Image 1 (cartoon, rainbow, N blue to C red):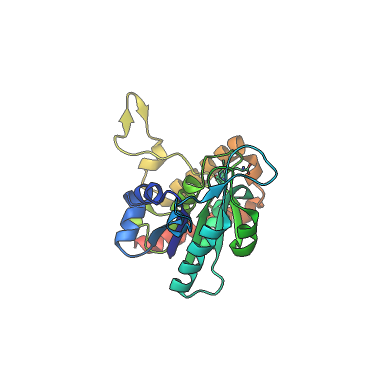
Image 2: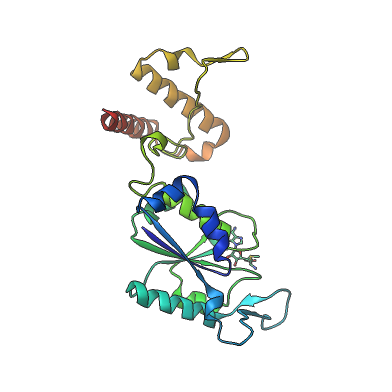
Length: 248
Ligand code: SAM
């Protein structure tokens, strides 16, 4: 998976993504991330990339031309006719784990980060294929949303996670939130780990985790429980088996 980020703040995205698991994924060659500075494609001598909005109003709008030139240079370099270009915007479709799984199947993704009041509509109409929001709030720029998306998608790219940080059982898997997790010691300040987790009985542990996931999802996110109980249990048990086979 190759990510390209069109941004006015390349150092912000690169420093944020070059650490921890995503950084390791880059080092191991499972993903690559390149930030392209839109300002490098400014055509005026002051290097400005924004201007006042037509019709008046507060703030500045990012101009179409530098974005177009940055996009065209990239498109030609990667040799793609119509690459998938995601514009981060509060007006887009709300990002979800399901969308991340779809994006993880792509070989390359281009992210366009807006700033100030946003981007000239004409360039969005010309190059953008997807508009995505990370939630119903307004940030100062698209850089953090792009980082959120890249982090989430990369965890689903083969090889990025190892067995220690497997994505098989996690919140939103089978439309359930994750069960509670415990690690050593078995007792901390008088609070004990549930007995079943120490029992060594895989089937009982699995059943307990499923029931806890269901309880927590009912309490906190009942809207997720749209799969029928049978479908949900099958999806859950199926992946438990798969994970055990991988571990053997
Ligand atoms: N005037 C725009 C509006 O009301 O829709 C908001 C502009 S915002 C201050 C600047 C940039 O931040 C946007 O162009 C977008 O790239 C990014 N942004 C802000 N909030 C976002 C969100 N919730 N999801 C994705 N991108 C967001």
